[in-house]
Image 1 (tube, rainbow, N blue to C red):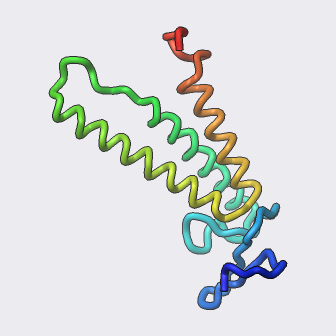
Image 2 (image 1 turned 180 degrees about the horizontal axis):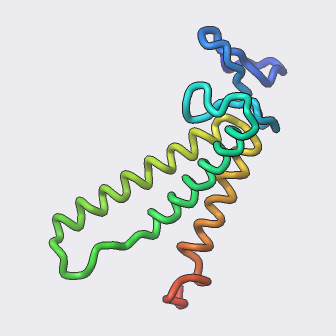
Length: 132
């Protein structure tokens, strides 16, 4: 069973024989988002962390994206904004699923990506409207 009341912090999936952690751990031997990825390679693990970092930045970018101009077709604007929202939600869920690998590096990459995205796209530092 994946969820036990014992003191074990890892579980091996019976069909795939992959190791799953039930608490945060530090190490590069992890799986997240795709089967057998990033694997055991340090380079692929680093690429995976960069991927999660960029996904988190994109979530913040799409959260603040305002492309519909006043006076545009209302129905088209609503469908366009719904599409942007769907892309943002998809990226946010991918970040969440990556963090659910319980890898400390993935968690830090996601948090730092959201922080950088906030500073660049939503904070008053880079915003023309300083009244917010």
